[in-house]
Image (cartoon, rainbow, N blue to C red; front, side, top):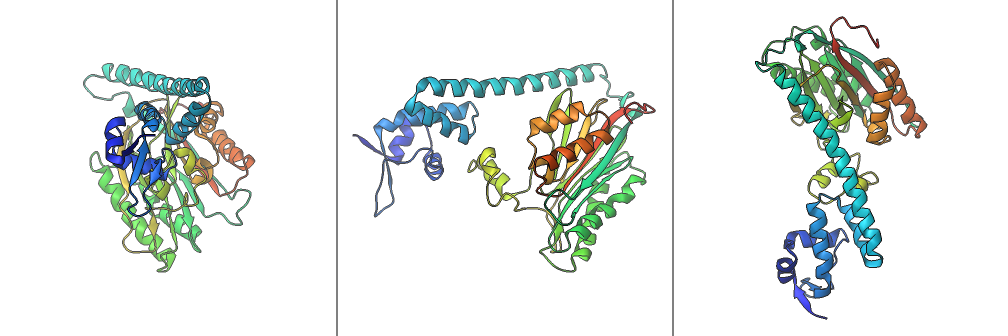
Length: 364
């Protein structure tokens, strides 16, 4: 059996040595032999077929967990491996179709308003509801959820004073619900408000760096939503039937997914899945928040939720409930109820807000 050094094998299969070392760690493509003295990796020429299969599947955008499954099937039954690839591609095409429809909607919207005057969006407003529940396992609720005419917010506290921390963070933003929003500089206004929330959390924590809270909030300007985000609470938009996440989790496992060291499927059961990289804490200073502006369109439905919802219900189930449950009031209760039916292992909070024409009372 011919043996190749890691460098020679990398050139032959078009994978970098760095990728080969990662796939070794993930038990996806192990070397045939490792020198016990130098630790140098050697690969058998017979492994080139599997390595090239990995390359092709990565080019398809297939997650590593699915690649591992295809490779295992390929060793036993190439027909089953082909069936797995076909199923993956069907899912990709379905997701692409949703994005294609959204692109068509956006193109039509922009072409109908070429001067960007936004006369139709100037008369939009929110219909909203917030609900928070202790869940089925926790003794106390450390979440806070808030919905008003301009401000939507969810905070998930942690540590001995988690409940006061989450409440303090949201309370520090509530002045924005009645504050006149400037035509420009809304992100600066929101960032300043978050700094006030940071101090409020620090006061609630009493100097303890074991206390803190996530914070995800949207501030309505009349045609746009300004987002501030820290932690692993989430914000989604349901638009034209497609559900899109507009926040990025600030967690250890998400950073590992971003680096290709972990798949989304593996992250669900990872022991560090709740470990945060960013939050408002009793420590000084806290991490910088994500700040962005999002254009809103009539018919949009926004969801803010704590991880007591997102870690329990898969996104296709969340989408189903957002589409089918009716008004924001009924929808938030349906979402919380579904999380509790799934075990309710954590506090669960959510805010649902619909973008509607001003004066439209339908669905209230």
